[in-house]
Length: 168
Image (cartoon, rainbow, N blue to C red; front, top):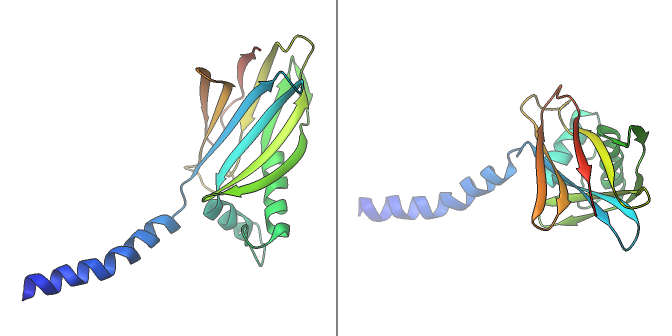
């Protein structure tokens, strides 16, 4: 009888524990920089967990931080992301244009682009400090390239910029 009660309790409490685990900050953001030869643009896509984004907005003083239900909240966080990601192309600081954002699963995606140099080859210098001002343990990964030729760089609070070639 005691065995059945323990099993029943475990079954009832398991979904609650799983929900609590999903509610914790993941403290990781992933950005991808790739050349789109068809459009002639360097495309940047940032992926941030929705819960982390909402927590960051609240930490910055937003009264209502609802990334899924409020376009205003989503756009406010997208603006924050674009300010916290720095990019140079061939030694020149560039400000990638904001293209838009969307929610897929539990992630907020923020898209940017900048015109690629002629020939599509460039030396990039970049630094991702997304959410490092919110959490000391935040880790940001930046992937350069696409397909099977991807280089990954990891940034934390205070990390110095990294350099990588961008090739077609």
